[in-house]
Image 1: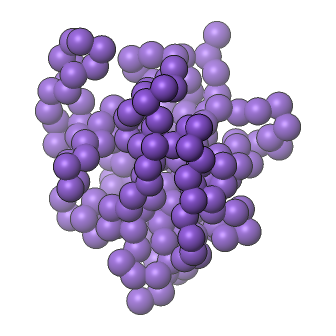
Image 2: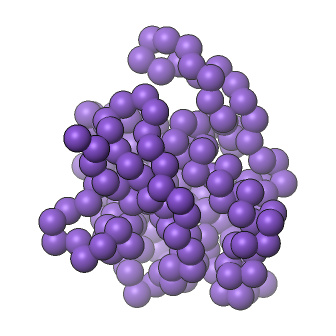
Length: 176
């Protein structure tokens, strides 16, 4: 049975407009130590997938839902390697403020400038996954490797941005 999850591409409203990424704690059963977007599985109390995404954003990095304006919902993607999750990404512009990590789920948090992601894009490379080499889209940034489902989500984001489907909606909420 497939499970549902939601993640957030959280873009800071003020320049340099960084996108928030988390490094998952090493003890977690699902994707230990990997880099991802804030998000997780649907809980029974979540009103909808957007509520799931915003709840997880708050739990994992301390961004309260009131600080986030959701501007888009991207197409659902299926995890390829493990877990049977159908993941729905949301794009939100967030107000600047303190980031706090949940030490149970999150080992660290960092930002990649929006411009870096849009200019650099992703490439295909081989990555180690559970002792075997798999081909994946990747984005390398300051010694960190973003790959797998997170990279596929970023690829969709970049494609929609370049087609103008996101640039106007996100841009209307950004400040210089």
